[in-house]
Amino acid sequence: MLLVIHIVGCNLLHHFPNDVEFGATSCTLRFRQPERKNMKIISKFKDYYDYLVGIYGEDPLLVFDRRNQNGTIIHKFPALPDEWQAEYGDCVGLAHLFVGNWHTWLFYTGQEVYTTSDIETVHSRVRHNKKIVPIVRFNNGKEYAMPTKNQWHTTHDYFLTTITRLRYGMATYHHVPLMLILEKHHWHWNEVDSYYVNPQLVSLGIYVDENVVWQEISAYLGQLRSEQETSPPVPDKNKIENKGFDVKHSFRPKMKRK
Image (cartoon, rainbow, N blue to C red):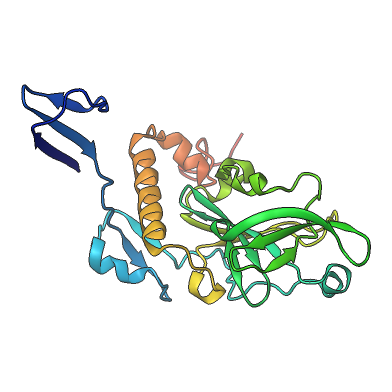
């Protein structure tokens, strides 16, 4: 949406951006407002941002199908290891939330869930076991240890660095608008991060601005649709082979093969 403001008696000595048109005694400012995105939600559950469909409306071409949860449904964050409390005191587990292309860190304690915007500062401290561990302090004054992070490299800036889907090798989940990744609790060779598709945020205690969630998901759905429309057509031969058929023999009359 293009918003145009016409100002009479504009002072030409002022500095204006490039999108200003000057007249003898007036100037016109033009700037673009973000487009409101519509989408349709198909789901077996409700989430806290669903009510925005009544504000933004539905678009049958942009469908957010939350029924696709890849067979794994998460209703709460996993319990933190018992030994953490004994060794470090109050601790947090770490996770990532991708809403479309937008990302935030999540810090879960068992009772509360914090996001990147809740961080006041990050520093290192020697705990009672004489181990140095990075500490995150949130805006409410509460502090928690982060046992899975290196004390020398974990700073406030570390959590402010832009993180993209490519960093976490999410090519398999490129079609998924909403992703939750839980970082492993231990650096065991047989322990891996856990990926969850289209989770129910309210059941996990995750609250991000609902307008951000709606806009980012709908924008991502629009991106996926554009990619689909601009992708080159797949030849019939490739379609057949992708379905597991043998082009040379599968569609011929039954006969003895030489």
